[in-house]
Structures are given as structure tokens and as C-alpha cells.
Image (cartoon, rainbow, N blue to C red; front, side, top):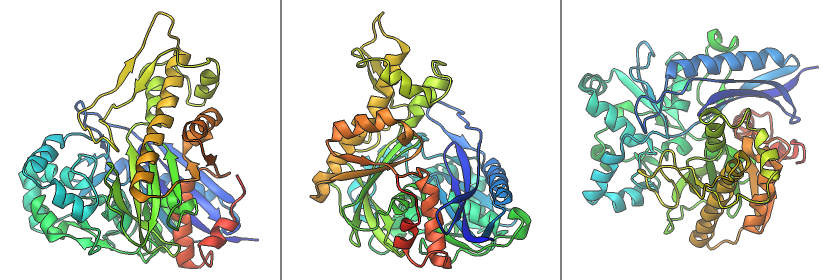
Length: 464
């Protein structure tokens, strides 16, 4: 007998995941595939948007094929947020490689805007800081460095958006050019107070408004997929940036609840309710979701490199065969033997915002073994996360009693135990740590009637 379900598409920084999530919380189909990372210059990070599209549709079809007992009701999308794509409205072909959130090429642009005295006003309007992390300066860089693309943009021939918008455009054969508040709030172009694209910011960053998508509620109507892509026509009922999707999937719908996602980076969000809270401690104010998928707000602290440090030890230095090996190595030594690792490969995020910083390893001796390096990398995740959570408590006046965790590195028992010790509070890990995809499923499923409300979705999930 078939069970109502949602297809969740989680388009991440290094790969795409598809889950078919049943009403009773079971995962009926699952698929994942990595895609290529491009590093054309030091500090530059790019993706091939066409490859992202093909990989995402492939894993979606694989997950749907595996879910033989699913009555799939619709699609939820979550995505790496600040990565920006520019494409031809007519052909839907990318006209430039996607510039990834990790990319640092716009550091000088951000510095020039700050020196011109715009930092305070940008922060007041957006809740963000002038940093290369965000989409707006990436789009400015493309248009400044490719005059033919600026001409086409101003003529209305091009469309732009974050990865959710790109996938929606392709899934609907160009019929839908839309995003949601959680993604829009990461562009440096969206005003938190008016909940709309800001004319002053568009002028400051030289962005034609015609390039930008319509902003719709996170649990909302995002059109219907073409049957040619997924093999079936399905309504898209939910869209959210990855960290806000994880916040929703963890059941953090009310003020005072916090989560940390340990993925490529570590991303802490503290829900602040229906009013934005301005940060005085180097955090971001960002859009989030209430229990109905409507607009709410959160404080966010982004650690740019977390799991990526373990990936570097594996792929860059070759001292790990796989990420899972890191836990046993961390347990194999009593401490780091004085080794300290600051994995600022792409600058430092919250609360320091140092785009030109680079990674550092100190304390090396002839007695240093690979286990010490691995343990130092894991400890850096916990210490950076604790620093951000402390800033959140200072901004909000809320003493956090529990941290909900998810993401691949959250499966590392040693790391989670060390994190709890550093924070001095409990760390709660759900049975299903893919809460980013689960949050996307929940937003779409609530909109489309698979679950009557958010608590019903959470009740269906197995205990951690």
C-alpha cells in the first residue's frame, strides 16, 4: 500500500542529496552524488551550474525509483545559499560559472564599500556585513568584469538567483523565477524590515532589479515540475536555504531554540521569533521560518570551514582514507600535544569577519602524529562553535540550555561529546541527521497537506 510522501532535494556545496520522506517519517528512497569543485585562482571557488542541475535531477530520479511504495505529493528544495548563478532566460543556459559562497574574489569590492562609509547602512537594512560571503557582490563582480553580460542583463535577457532559484527555473522549464525569504536575506539586496528587494542596495551594488526573482513564502507555491525532468509532474511546495531548512527540520520554530549544522562549514542559528534582533557581537540577522513556514527571524553565526578541514586532511594531505576514520584517531591520543589548527582556508566568518585570513597550524614538533592533527581539526570545530554560541547569548540575552545538532560531522560521537564538554550544556542529535533535507520536506509537506502542521511532522520522526 502506498504512503503519502515528499521528495526533498538538498543541493549542497559538494553534492546533491534526494530523499523521499514518508508521512510516517521513514526514508523510502535516497540518493547522493558529489560534483566537481573548481578553484581557478587562490581564494576563488566555482561550480558548473549545469553539472549541479544534471546531478540533482539524476539523484532525484534514483530516489524516486527506489521509493516503490511512495505516493509522492510534491517537492521541497533546500540549497547552499549564497552561491549565485546567472543564466539566459530563453535557453536556460548558464552564462557564467556559479560563484560559490566560499569564494573570496570580492574582498576588495567589500573593502571599498566599507571605506566609502556604507557598512552601517548596509547592516541596518540587511542584517549582514560587507563580506564576500554574500551573493550581491558576486553578482556585481560578474557584471563589472563582463560588459556583454551587463548589457544583456539590462536588456532583460538574463536571470539571476541562488541555487534554489536556478533549480526552480530548470524544473519548471523557465516558468518560475522565484526564491524565498531565507535565501533572499543572504544576498545583501533584501531589506529585512520591508521584506522586499531594496532600491538603495540595488543601486549601491549596481544590480538591475529585472535580474532578481520574486520572493515567495518558504512554504508556498513555487510552480510545478515538468514531467520530462523527474518523470512526473509535481508541485513544489517548499523552499528554504540549507541552514534555515535545518533549523525548521530540528523543530526550532520558536524564539530561544538553537541548532548547529556541521557540514562543509558549521552554521549556528538561534531563532529570535517574529522580530529581527540586531547583533552587536559579529553575528548576522537573517530570515527564518515560523511553524507555518512564514517569515520569522534568527541570529546566525557562520564558521566557514568545519567538515571541510577533515576533507582537506583526507584529500589535500592524504592522512585520512575517509572522514569516518577521524573519530578513532581523535580517541587514540589524550590531547593534541600542543597542536592548534585554525582552518581559515577561505577567511574567517563570525564573529571576526576577516576575509583575508588563511589557515594556520601551530605547535608542530617531531612528536606530532597524524592523530594530533586530526584531533586538532575536530577540536577547532567545537571551539569555533562555542565562540559563536557565546556571541548569540550576548546578543539575545538568552542562556541556551541545549544545542540541537545535525550534519555529517554530527555523527562523530567523540566530536559531539567534546562539544558538550566545551559548552557545558547538552547536545541533542536526532536519529535522522539529514535535517536540512527533512526541513525542506516538512515545509513542502505542510503546504501540500502531507502533515497537518509542523508538530505532526516532528512527531513522525524517530527519536535520536
